[in-house]
Image 1 (cartoon, helix red, strand yellow):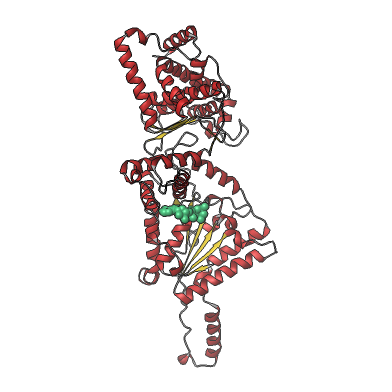
Image 2 (cartoon, protein in one colour):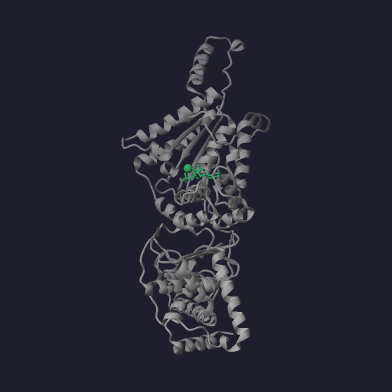
Length: 568
Ligand SMILES: Nc1ncnc2c1ncn2[C@@H]1O[C@H](COP(=O)(O)OP(=O)(O)OP(=O)(O)O)[C@@H](O)[C@H]1O
Ligand SMILES: [Mg+2]
C-alpha cells in the first residue's frame, strides 16, 4: 500500500516520550535526505535499512509513518505476513514485486521509504543459520537488572516471553526462499534500472561501430534514494544475514517509556481527551506517569480511553482522576463483578487485603498504595495494588524481603484474626516463592553464591529458575528458611499493629474499595487514634482491641509469639 506524504496525518511532533529513539530517527532522516552529498563529498554509503525492534504499542509503526511524512517521500507499507502465499514460489515473487515497486517509486519521486511491519513474519532465521544479532559479546560483564524479580516492567516481560516463543520459527521452504530473496533484493538498490541497463546495452552495441575517439559514454547510473524500515517485536529471531552491514545494520530499540516520557505522553494524549480540572494538575499527571510503570505508549492511550468510558458510564462528559484509577483496575485486572459474598467471606477477604496493605505501609514507605479492594475482578476476590514511586531498575535485598513480607501479610492476617487460613493466599505464596528462589539461586543474596542461572540446558531441574532452585535440596532449604523468616517478621508486625488491620478491614467491608490516599487516610487515622488511646491508658497497648472471633486467648499468644520470635 502506498501512502503519499500528504496522506500521512502524523509527524514527528506526534511521536512523544521516546527522545533517544527520536533523535536517532532524525539523524537517519538527515542522512537519507542528504545522501548525495554524504556519498559524493564524504564517500559514505547511504544507510539502506533500519530495524525497529520493541514491544507491541511502543510506537514503531507511528514513527515510521512520521519519518515518511517528514521526509516528504512516498511510504510503501507492507506487512511481513502479506508476502505469504500458499502457492509455490509466490512468496518470493511478492517480495520481488514489492522491491520493484519501491525502486520505481523512488526513481519517480526522488526517494521512498519502504516499511515492512511484523518483519519476523518473513525474515525469520533460515534453518541452521542461528539467530540474529543484538546479543552482547560474551566477554562483556553486564550489570544485571531485574530478571525474574518484581520489577517495573513486569507486564512487558511477560509479553516479550510470549513473543520469543512465537519466534521459535524456521519457516517452510517457501519462506526460506523468501529470506534469500530479501537478501538479494536488499542489495539491489544500487543496481541500474531495466531502462538504464537497456540503454547501456544499446550504447555498447553502437560503440562497436564507432572509432575509439568517438565512443559514446554510458550515462551515469542514478541510484534511487530508498530507506527500508522493518519492524519487529524481537530481532533475535531474524536471519543473521539480514542484519549485516549494508542491510538492516542499524537496530533501534523502542523501549518502554521512562517516567519522564510517560509524563510527556500523558500531556500529549490529554490534549485531545476531555478531562476534568483535577487531571490538569501536575500532581495527578505525575501520579498518572507513576502508576503507568511498564506501560507502552499505546497502553497509556488505551487507559485514558477506558477512563473516558468510565466517565460516560457515570454520566459525565469528561474523565476525572477516579475514572483513571477505575480504568486501571479494569484494564489490569478486569471488570468488577457484582458477587454476594457471605458475611464470613467478606470479612475474610477484607482481613486478608487489609493485612497486605498494613504490611506494605509499615515496611515499605517508599511504595505507593494505589488500590485496595474487595470487589471481585477476574480471578481475584480482592487485591492490593501497590507500586514504586519511581522507575526501578534494580532492587536491594532489603526491598525484596519487603516484597515477600507484603505477600505474606494476607495469610498472617487471616491466621491472627480468624485463627485459620483459606485458599486465598495461594497466589501470594507462588509470588513469594518465585522472588525467594531468584534471591537464592540467581542473585546470591543468601548463603550460597552459586548461580543456578549459570546451568545450561534443561537436565537439571528444568529451564525454569524456580524449578532449578527447588529441585536442589540445599536451594530448597534456603528458600524455606528465607520465607519462614519473613513470615515470622510479618506475624510480629501485624500482631503489634492489629488496630491498623482492623481499621482497614472495617473500611473495606463498608466501602468495598479504597483508592490512593483513602487507604493511607484510614491507616493514619487509626494510628493517631491508637496513640491517643495509649497515652490516655497505657494498658491499652498491651491489650489490643478485641479480635473478630473474640478468641482473646489465642490472640495474646499470637502476639507473644510474634514478639519473641522477632529476630533482633
Ligand atoms: N511515542 C508515541 N507517541 C505518541 N503516541 C504513541 C507513541 N507510541 C505509540 N503511540 C500510540 O500508540 C498507537 C500504536 O502504536 P504503533 O502502532 O506505532 O505501535 P507498534 O510499536 O507499531 O506496535 P506493534 O509492534 O504491535 O505493531 C499509535 O497509533 C499511537 O496512537
Ligand atoms: Mg506496528
